[in-house]
Amino acid sequence: MKISRVALLAYIFVCFLADGVLEIRNERFYTTALAPASSKSHSGAPSQSNGYGLIMAGALQVRVRRDADEQMVLAHVTNRLAPLVSHLTVQVSGSDPSKGIAV
Image 1 (tube, rainbow, N blue to C red):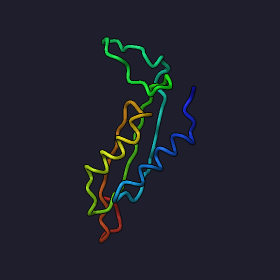
Image 2 (cartoon, one colour):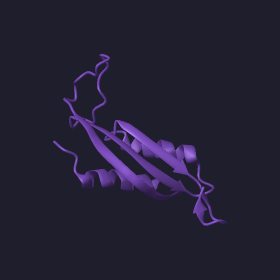
Image 3 (cartoon, one colour):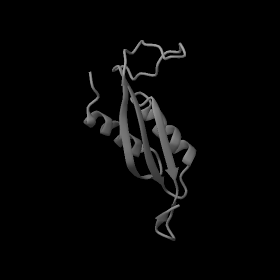
C-alpha cells in the first residue's frame, strides 16, 4: 500500500497548527526502500518503516515568527511527520520583520 500525496500533504498541513509557524517550504520526500514492516536492517536492528512497508526520507524548511519557540516548533513538526517519514530533516528559521526576510 502506497502513501498518497494527499495523505502526506495532510500531515504537512497539520504542522501549520504549531504556534508561530508562518511558512513551510522546500518540502521534499522520497521513498528510499520498499521493505516489509517487520524486516531488520543490516545491523540487526528493526528497520524504521511507517507501517506501509515504505522507508521514507524527507526534508523541509519551516519559517517561524521571531518570538516563536523554535524548539517547540521543531518537536511538533517532527512528531507529526514521524509516523510517515523515517529519516527527516527539519530546518527551522526565524523571521526578522524589520528586514522583511528570514534569517
